[in-house]
Each structure stands twice: as structure tokens, then as C-alpha cells.
Amino acid sequence: MTTASAIDFGRPGVRRQSLWRYWRGGLQGSEFTWAVAFVVPYIGVFCAFVIYPALYGLWMGSNPSLYTEVFSDPIYLNTVVNTMIFLAFGVNVKLFLALMLSGFFMRPGWWTKALLLVFVLPWAVPALPTFISIHWMLNGEWGLVNNALYILFGVDGPSWLNSRWLALGSAVFSHVWKWTPFWTVILLAGRMSIPQEIYDAAKVDGATGLRRFTHVTFPLLANLYLVLTLLATIFLLGDFTSVYFVTGGGPANSTHLLATLGVVRDMLELGKPQLGVAAVMSALPLLIPLVIILMRKLKTSEAQL
Image (cartoon, rainbow, N blue to C red; front, top):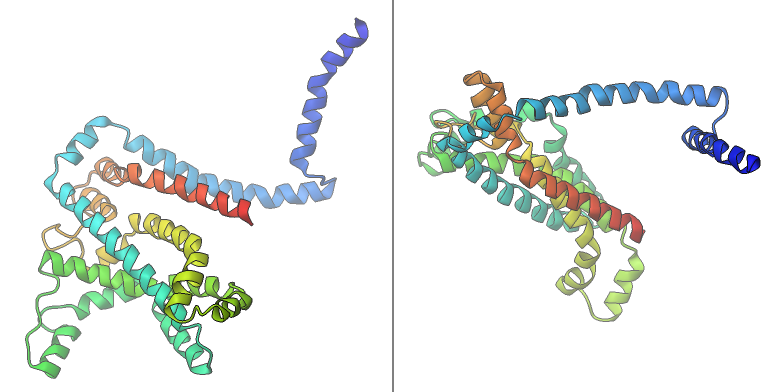
């Protein structure tokens, strides 16, 4: 009995030692000290700039009365429609173009590489000056676009930023133009990872041109394309710069997205940060399932590898 009791009392200590050995990862002495010294700053930065802002935002938007005020706002309903339109066109158009252009840049030749270098430039340029330049180019009176239409075709261009749908379309176009090169490079890397032997075997079976794309290339890229679609949707839900610097949410707050409505209208103009947080957090019912699907998809892909 005494021996059994001693063993039972010793088990928690053994478990603690095993857990401590697990967290040390086999590091001993100064190696473990240096590992802790490198990890602690990253943990501190993560807690300060990720965990704390997220928890503070949840606390600011925790009052149910805020959502009653948000949902009763007619501008909010238009904003939800704008966000859905922006997601539908902004995500699908840029990824479809990226998929097609990645096939074009697979062509051999130095000129293709030179075009790829030029094509990536819009993504490499900082977003702030890019979207501000587009805003002034779309000026209805003396902007570059309308002046070019008048000089080349003798017609007066529309007031791009004074109409809801023209302004929203301009913001969507600007976003697609800015971010298509980024997704093109990713899909290009995916195409380059497909073994050439698969294409050779498909060619022997008569799969060339469009048939090779539909029966070989796209099935092999489908998983990557789905992951990129989920990522692009998550990124676009939090996008602020495209609309803010191109349209400013105008005219008359008709082109706001959820991100710009909460920050520009509610926080800056109305001085109601809690209301702005509630407006932004109203996208969580869409965002959380997307994140869960993305994590499960990534886990499945890792298991397949």
C-alpha cells in the first residue's frame, strides 16, 4: 500500500516534468534561454497589436443597442448591398483574370518575362498614391480620363464620382487593377509546380489547348483557386483604401463599404466609435464561417501532402 501510494503521489510530478520537457523541445541550458529571449518579444507584440485590439473592439461593440441603431440606418442597408457587389465582382473578376493571365505568362521567351515585370508594377506601387491618383484622374471636369475622351473621340465623359454606380464601379475597377498582379503571381507559381510529365501524357491522349486546361490544369489548380478565393474574400471584407481614396464614400455616402462606413462616417464624421465598431463587426457572421472553411481547407490540403 505504501509503495502504491508513493507512486500515485509521484505521478503529478512526472506529468509536470513531461509537460515541461515538451515545452522545452529538447533545448538545454543557454539554448533554451536564447529561444525564450527571441520568442517573448514576438508574443508581446502579438498580444499588444492583435489580441488586445481584437478584445477591445469586441468590448466596444458589445452593447446590443448599437446594433439596433446600425440596422435601422438606411445608409447601412445600402452599404451591405455595396459590400456584396464589391465582393462579387472584386473577388471573382480579379481571380478569373489572374487565372487567365497566369497561363499567358507561362509562355516561354524573354519578352514574356519583361511583360510580367511591367505587369507586377501596379501591385508593387504603394496603394495610397495609386488610389489618390485614380481619384483625380476620374475628376469630371479636368480629369485625365474625361480629357482623353474629349481629345480622342470628341465626347464629354460622365461625372464618374457623382453617380453611385459609376463611382462604385470605379472603385471596383481600381481594386481589381491594383490586386490582380498579386494573385496572378501566386497562380503562376501554382501552374509552374505542375509536373511537365502530366502535360506530356495529356498531349499523347489528345488533350491540347482548351481541353488541356479544363481536364488537366484547372482540376490541379482547383484547390489553390478555392483557397485564394476565400483569402481574397476575407481580405476584401476589411479593405478600406479602395473606396476611401477613390470615392470617399460619396456621393452622399452611397458607395461606402462596411469598413469605410464604420471608420469614416461613424467614427470620424459622427464621432461615435462604438457605433463604427458595431458596423464593422456586423460582418462577423460572414467572416467567421469563411475563416473556419479556410482553416479546414488548409488542414485538408496539408493532410493530402
